[in-house]
Image (tube, rainbow, N blue to C red; front, top):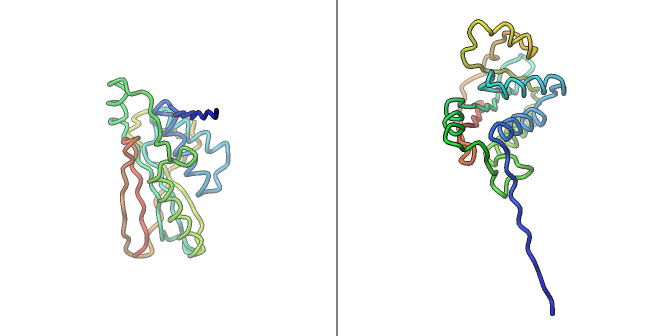
Length: 175
């Protein structure tokens, strides 16, 4: 008599760890960020000092032609935490626990970067940091910077990630 069994497992992450994983994968796949800088940025996410990461594809004139943005709504995150939803299980089909919305956007972003021979650069956005801003920037190794100008008009699409709804993914492309 033959027997079969099926084993099904579901990964569960603390919400903050799954957010950090999304940011980490996106930065590793789209930039040449050093491990030290990546760890500093993830510390900024952990402490809710960073609420946006923008990765730009820029041309030889340093003009933006595409942009991938990850926005974290910390107020929504806190609502989940206060309601006891401190953990989240990614969709079982997420490749390497990467949200479909982010993975597909990264793929299109990098395809555009390669096809147009662009380089990438990144910026961070922050909630109000008050009097601690300078100290936080120093701790994270950040300096004030400005987004590159766009080479022309742009179009965008925004994705919400249902399983991690405090995260939004923006993709902008030159028209």
